[in-house]
Length: 386
Ligand code: EPS
Image (cartoon, rainbow, N blue to C red; front, side, top):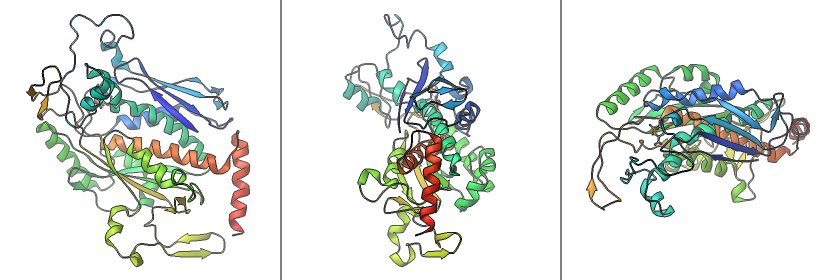
């Protein structure tokens, strides 16, 4: 399975094309819209989210609520396009009073993008580099989640830290079982004291014209043994998941299971001991591996974390150089999010859901949902004989 997204932040719409989905998968548009709404939440979001109310439209690949096996097109309109019609017009001349963006923001794709693509107006870079694109990826992930749910696989997430404010430890299984409570927190954090401190920290960053990053955790339960493979680098499940998470705007690091902390421990305190029970089969007594050994899912929940850097669009100006005259400047912006870590966690759920769905589809094969289900049943039986 594969997908592409297209669309500029202030263009008419975002589009995603998904290919390789099995036929006969029931798809509920409301569940896609629910995921889109989850991404729009979060303490610290800026003015743009008051304009947008993301809704999906299916343009192909589905009939009477079920996939056809043909490429699926999804579209999310940008309401803000109404305010940008002239400046983002597909044809004609630019309006006489158009303001070119020539001042690159440190930390954004602005300068490197303009240099690479030989563009004089940085808007031609930032429109696509914008995290607006993640709305399309959340729609894609919402489809993947509906496929995964058929096989009892569920994806959850929560925010572990914002700036220097960290949540107390909450077990991954508690998060997976209490996703509605996580969603009810404006910072998507179950530790109420930490959540209050995170919001206070975001308020302070806003007052100071600054922005904040943080860390979120993704938990996927119900993943069967055997997704991904040890045989090739690009089939390793942890590699697929890390790449997907790193591809989210502003993500600078990914951990699997115990992650970086494991490097400081001896092996005897790291590796998960193996147990066996007659009816349930094999298990791990701990899950420091984050559910993946040798690039293969081992039947334990997948646990991944991603670190998001602070958003580079700041009210507090940083030193940069104008591309029009190479003169230094330090200018403020008009509109930005102070913190988008809670939203990024939803995007993380989506991209990970897609990768797990791809690995499941590769494991089971099949052009229809019925075929996938039949292969799944055979595989489950085989596992019980090992
Ligand atoms: C973004 C800048 C802001 C964010 C945007 C990402 O948009 P604008 O430039 O229109 O104020 O709100 O995020 C979204 C629109 C979204 O849907 O997440 C950026 O520069 O990356």
